[in-house]
Amino acid sequence: MSTNLEFINRYTAVPGVAYLETPDLFSAAYDVYWYTITKFSISADEVYELKLLDSSNSVIEADYDWVSLQLKSNTSFNESKNTNRPKVDFMSELDGDLEKNTGLSGYIYNPYLSSSYTYGNIQSSGMDGTNLFGSKNVWRHGSAVQINGVRFAPQSPKTINQLEVNMYGVK
Image (cartoon, rainbow, N blue to C red; front, top):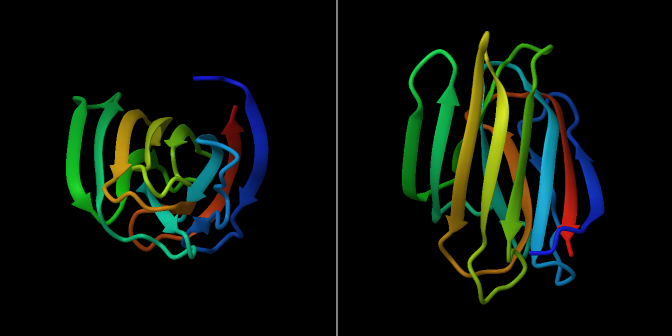
């Protein structure tokens, strides 16, 4: 895989919203996308989730398969696996304290190809209270459809204090 990144856009959430969407992000220009999140704080402790947007920029609420290895400094490691879920979750632990943050990056493969599955991987580091939290994840959407964008959100009804996502195309 080539490793030349081309910056596409920076998306920033308005404080107080429940999610951030990137409509009309994907195109035929790239088969692979890379994103990084360096600012993501929320109103209370929670985990991060991802959903895809279809060709009309509507949220896809079904058919996600994922596996997550959660690495915690205060307890044993945990592996989660789910199939046919309404979202991809357990990607990172989000601490509700404003001074704490998360570092997260991931690849998304073949989103714009309606003849191929969209899949990705994610790695993260962050805090859960005073404890370190890291994760490695792989996921796929189980239907071969055109994907136009992504929705980033904390799981359950929490509000976003700060969220910044940088998106790149890989050439």
